[in-house]
Every structure is written in structure tokens, then in C-alpha cells.
Image 1 (cartoon, one colour):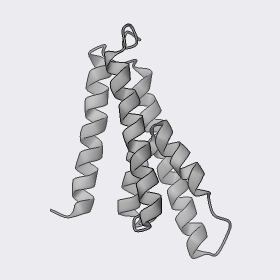
Image 2 (cartoon, rainbow, N blue to C red):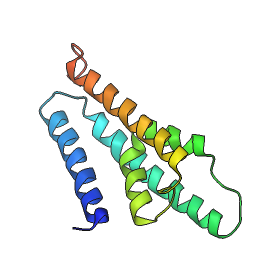
Image 3 (cartoon, rainbow, N blue to C red):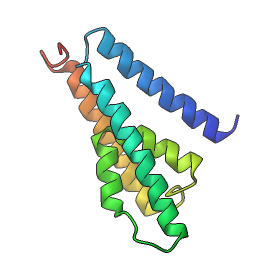
Image 4 (cartoon, rainbow, N blue to C red):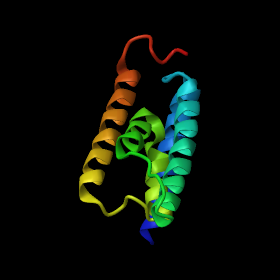
Length: 120
């Protein structure tokens, strides 16, 4: 199976689990919206940055891409990396990107176990 298809399946599974946890009352319902909106923003910003790179125009700062990922846009960023083949080879970028994914998932895990948080 191509890695792009695997990535799409992984992202859809993650978002499905988050939605199921919100539906079950284990997470605030707004979390699903945050992930979806931030992922859409991330994908669009990656597409814009790739276009700018190809057109030799102003680029989006890597720190901005990382901030969007950290705030919940990492599923969309991961899809953009695979589908657009952008920011998918630069090792220093990927190390920080995966750190943002781990931090984001750590906060999500904390929300699951923190008393009273998931009742929204």
C-alpha cells in the first residue's frame, strides 16, 4: 500500500477516535472542530508555501508551520507533506514537526485524564 494512502488512513483514524471520544463525553466537543479547522488551515498554508517556493516568492516561516501543527493542525500538515510533497524531506524541519505532534498528542492525552475537562 502506498505511503500516501497509509497516511490518509492514519489521519482519518486519529480524527475518528477524537470524534468518538468527544461524542462519548470524554473530550470537549470543540476539540474535533479545532483539529478540523487547524488541519484545514495547515493544509492551505502548506499549499501556499509550496506555491511560493516554486514561484520564488515570500515564504511562510517554518515556525508558523510548526505553531499551526502544535495547535492541532498536524493532521492537515501531515497530509500536505505527503500529498503535496512539501516539507517532507528536510530533516531538521521534520524533527521539530514530530515534536509538535508528540506535544499536541500529550496535551490531548492529558485532557482525557484530567478531572472534569472532558465534560464539555
